[in-house]
Image 1 (cartoon, one colour):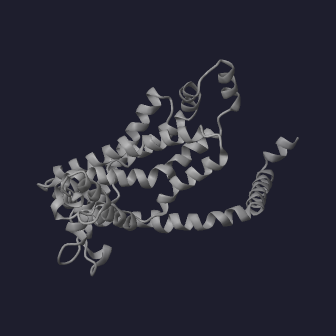
Image 2: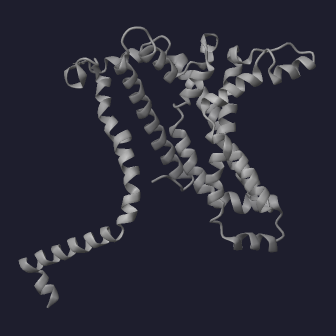
Image 3: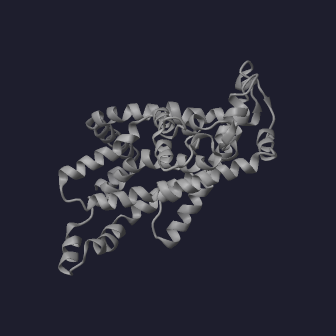
Length: 323
């Protein structure tokens, strides 16, 4: 009988009204949660979604005076200009090498650190070490590079003082192109390993304690429990973080590079972002915003392709993926 009533026009209208009322009540019941969500949602809309409409200038000869609506359309001219630049392949090489070394050292070290820290049984020591490792994340890039300059200064720097005491001449590390990549990667490791380790430590808290108890009954050592229980249990988290790291392979920390580099190390330090900054924003005359937007869009497209490719490979072979 109820189904018969609901099949009539009046019944369908009443049913829709009941659903609307139910939806409103659910939203109103969670109004405080939505209120907490609101600042983050506004931040995403204002700083993430709305700027996407500005990418249209990548296809224009954009002029600040003419604005987006009245600037001349040039199609793919800005993209082809960058691809035909004689300096293009050196920039790509430098960017990929920095990203590769970042992936090689910055990615696995937090995993290793989290595995060892998880084995610490004294809770106060564990918290102290975790806090100490997390602290560099809050230090700005400017301060970190300043510390590096002081440590490596050829005059009075701690590292060169030690080298001099061993009979080795002072080395101007910050002006040597061969030292740029190790220093850049080392700074990233120092700043990020404690912060990234939190993700893996959080994943370890969800491991079933019975697995460790079973391993103890079987006589497993600590090393065996790490490799047979802990690592397999957090493998999905590691895969997801690796896929995200792959997506950032064409990105570098521009702040650190701009603070560290100078003309004497352009050969290894000049990457796509720093070159675009120098050419499009820091050069004489009016800034070429269109050129910078075109290069940024190209990087985003390549990064998206890399993420999708890594996700597909992971889904096929590791049976774990982002989606």
